[in-house]
Image 1 (cartoon, helix red, strand yellow):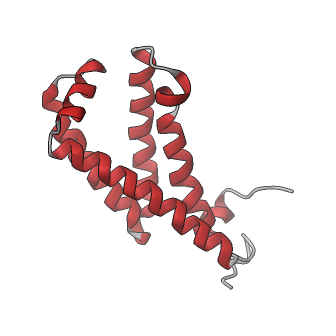
Image 2: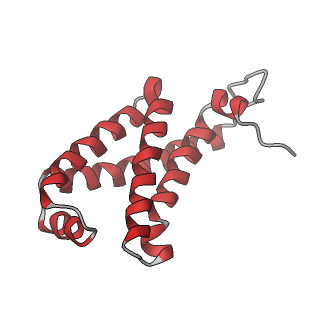
Length: 135
């Protein structure tokens, strides 16, 4: 069991839960990035429906993949989470602008953000020390 004087012990269960949540977020983001880099029809059509030209899809895919890799590497995971949060904010703003359904589209990037930060919070005692939960 890992301990930190500021954050308290990190249980094995919490660490594994954090790894699983992180893994799920990474797999989804890698999938999202790859379909954009491959410029699959679904990515092109969805991007157009959101009001963006098809030409931005490849760049968004590269950006998504790069930020996901930063997040997946333990040394740069906090930086990756911060930058992914910006990407998710843009996605939320885009869906808000086109009046997308709230729970399935508008908030989906928020759900991903919760997974990214929740997984990191559960597996990193330093983050828990920085943002402590009070009883």
